[in-house]
Image (cartoon, rainbow, N blue to C red; front, side):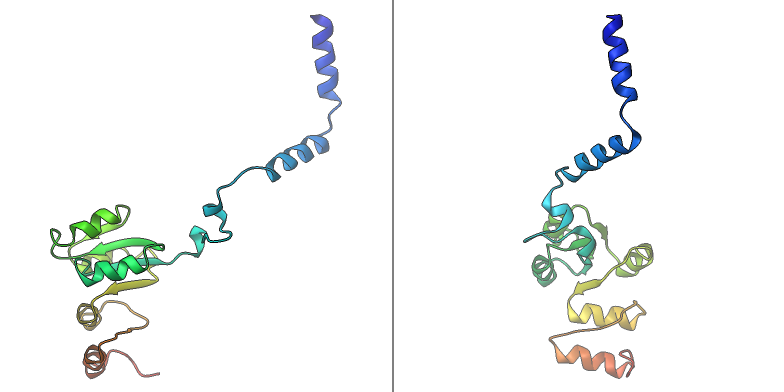
Length: 155
């Protein structure tokens, strides 16, 4: 027993710090990390996903969000929680709001790369002072509405 203990102590003392660190680095190089964490073929790493909020997500808004469901859905807002309930359930990690003004106030520290919503709802929110960089609409009526209000500042 004494001989085995002495042998183990002698062996441990013969390993240099450099050898130990090298072995640790080699072990770390072969650590398995899921593809979804690092990206890779067909997978986007979380750091490359957009943070998206949805407003008016009961009808068309739910369909719009479905088109970007692979991104980070961070906040959802709808005044009719019964009608929008299916969308709230689909994105349980997203914070839920009834008032877009409250959502923008409480989510100030969260980066939102895009806010999806019906053109009319978003146009009225912008008119009321909601922050925005770009307003895109397939409905020319709402683009003209904001232009008349002087909201899309001319560059």
